[in-house]
Amino acid sequence: MANDFEARSPRDTGWINLGEPQEVRYWTRVLAVTETRLRAAVGVVGDSTQAVCRHLGIPRVANRPASALQEAEQI
Image (cartoon, rainbow, N blue to C red; front, side, top):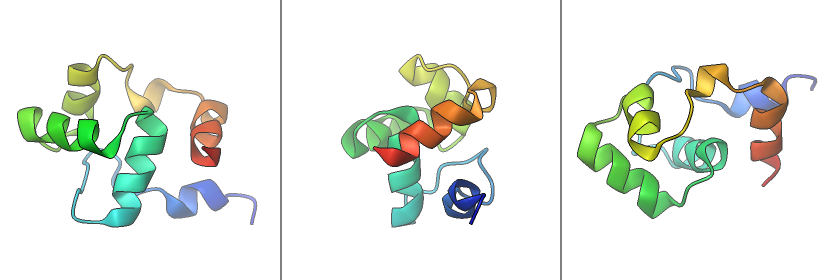
């Protein structure tokens, strides 16, 4: 499957759904943070990916090259 990474990514990458284990795994890998840190950030700023990235001091996910996202998936 050539695009296996996208098959495992959330349908809507604008929001972080902590109720879905596969999304928690995805976001911890993509953002390179622990689940605890991810949950804490969502608790402070809400589930908007943009707000979480800003809170964590991480450049927007949409601006990250696909190769960086694929490397994150391999972790």
